[in-house]
Image (tube, rainbow, N blue to C red):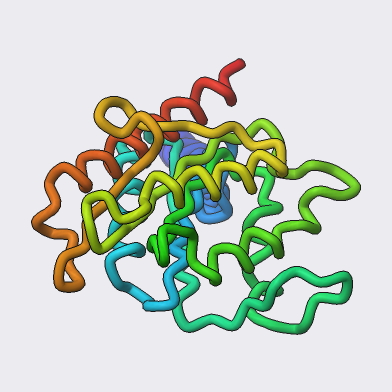
Length: 226
């Protein structure tokens, strides 16, 4: 009798363990695939200089966004060194082909775009990238009603950062997106100063990046919860 009970208990315990292991494995796979409830916020650095100050400023904003809610996952897309041509009716085969699907992800909940301020304007790479998002407008506005924020990096405190922010906002409004500023002092977006190829000493600028990222994360969570 004791042997029977022992075997029965063993089989029951083994079955429960197997179910638990299967559930854990499924949960792990769901997490890896961006499981249910996951909110993805993409950051795009539109500087031709890979890994430099614009990418660093965008990453600072992403870090703040991710801290808002445990469901938020972030990814930095650094366009530096990539080949992205302007929009045309027949776009060329370039690096945009591999990037575009990231913006079609159903989990995408928000966007943070960063650009250096060149001649008080967005970079040429930023313009090309934003134009090449055009397939996301037809037949459906894929990016509509998603929040976005803008990070601009300049060589002077008043080096055209706010103009750059306005230009990027104007373009993304054409995709039906919702512009988000930061909390004070980043009302319009993040304005960062690069001195000698470093933003490390710009406490004010990094604060605007953090405030912007935080607000984008907050709005993304609120919109999903509607």
